Length: 218
Figure (cartoon, rainbow, N blue to C red):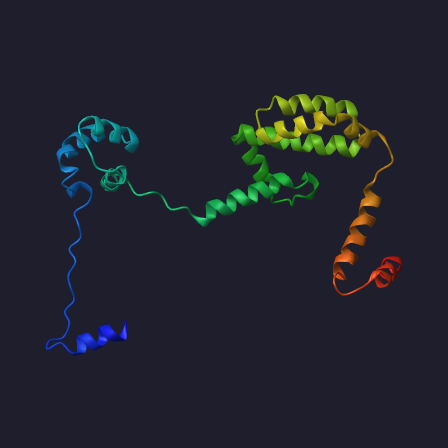
């Protein structure tokens, strides 16, 4: 409190009293919503549980209140939402991890889980098969298999694979060269990355001579 407020309260003959604030009626007890409660009950029992639709209907009947007031009223009629258990999230994360790992890296107790989950979800199974086929064609440098894979990925209906296939199409010559040529710019990129790392470690603290010696030493 401000000291002036304290001084004023101390000067009073009686101790200060708390003012009881009566909350304004809301929800179904609101006077704005009361004329439409019976109509809402009938529509709710008829199977219409869409708050937006009910709001439009009572507005046509003269309702001038807010949508949030209606939502507050309907919340009492809705069943409680089931809690989001951590177990379900853990299962989703573990399944994602099983799908992304190479099959040969799976543990004996993980393979049956993946074999049980994939047949239950057609989209997940399609994506998993596309992923394994792509890994195989890259490992075997199989250009004809890449052509077939691109068609299957574009017609799979899975947005991630469709986007990937379109991206490969835009530079398919370079991708095919990667599969057929023994040359790669990977070592060059590795050296460039190492030089950049050394440079950033000495940024603001070292000059060119020290940077040169560190690069040559590495």
